[in-house]
Image 1: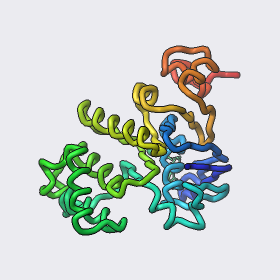
Image 2: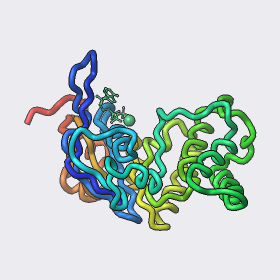
Image 3: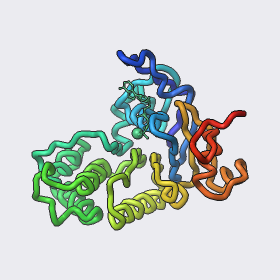
Length: 252
Ligand SMILES: Nc1ncnc2c1ncn2[C@@H]1O[C@H](COP(=O)(O)OP(=O)(O)OP(=O)(O)O)[C@@H](O)[C@H]1O
Ligand SMILES: [Mg+2]
């Protein structure tokens, strides 16, 4: 479902000069698979997800979603994905119900189908009780749930989720987790980034470890354990980044 080949993204930053956020990333993720991106702050995870979601144009390389090219067929790609990123703005003056209806309409739903789908999604994400409040007045976690709900209202086959459970309390994070698992079971392809090791282990069929814009390793948690000879998730992760447990770059 998702295929990335040699993706490069360079930013021309006024203060920092050229920033290479993606440095030749290739991977694929299939339908019915949850693929997780793990990596330190600034590794390039959000950039990768934004390129795949057609928000950013890659500097080099190619990527397709369901066979549609992210640069040449962005409209088709957008119809196939639901994309949520923490830094994405919401229309604060709308209510969750209005926001969901707006996104549903953008994606071609209308009439009774639209109403029932929006109601279903609001129930699923526990939004119904504050469906009529202004989004501006909701808590961080409530906003995050609305943000995820609105991106899946059209039931897309591919979900691209940037730190979906960040800022959520335990019950809400659990709810999102259950949603992701059921999406996988219904054959969807889920690509997510996370800093939560436990979540990565529980949810992800395969994990890609990203550092300095490169994929350092890809595999199941078991494969990553074996390749590093470490058991504890945090140690596996640090080993793949080439860092010692105190966070310093290990000398080769
Ligand atoms: N619009 C931009 N202009 C300049 N540099 C950018 C821009 N967007 C991202 N970058 C840089 O690209 C690099 C990768 O950033 P990115 O947001 O993809 O990291 P990340 O892995 O998502 O990190 P985090 O875990 O903190 O969310 C960083 O060095 C960042 O400063
Ligand atoms: Mg990020």
